[in-house]
Length: 242
Image (cartoon, rainbow, N blue to C red; front, side):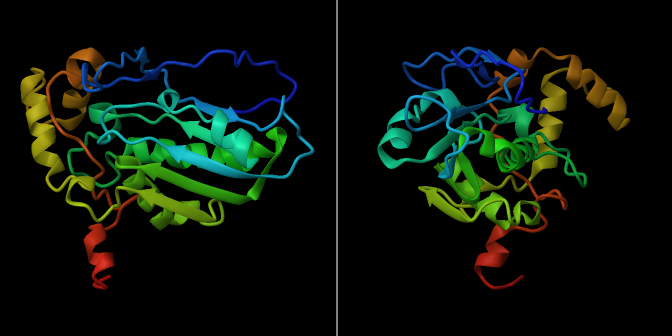
């Protein structure tokens, strides 16, 4: 999405969160939509100061890659008391974010969402008074693992300069989906889309399934080795085998 500095955008309310399984967050009800790829920008002071030169922090929320959202975490306190531009982001979750049949280039859509948010910040944060040469990426739990993935992805080189992974890393057992094709087959069977071996026919059927029905199936999705964003199991790198 192109940012137009001569266009007045109504930023007085939060946008909807990405579609996710119901009831996973106790005592928190999130309004959801497939139109969810928005980010929140918190600036210190009483308004946007484009002449400022504030360091930038981008926060990736946790939630097992299945639940949560940018709006749960208010960034005004961190921004105001520490003189930083804070950005919180949404990314596609659960089946819509990480379904993969195991083919090259499939899945990890949620990771690509994060990467595009980082690129957006790099290109436009100056309009909010941010310094694109001082960007710190941080997150908790699955967000911490996502931070680790973002740091390893060559497409982010030069776009982020420091990372903080809290309570989660890419080498955790739960941070990678080891058998995505099996999960894919279960999704196909449980949604009635087992229509033969033609991949395009199967995908056309899955796209017609209501997103709420997809997320109610109880599967667990996570990033997978797609030979495009993730080329090998992260543990190979941690053990010096790569």
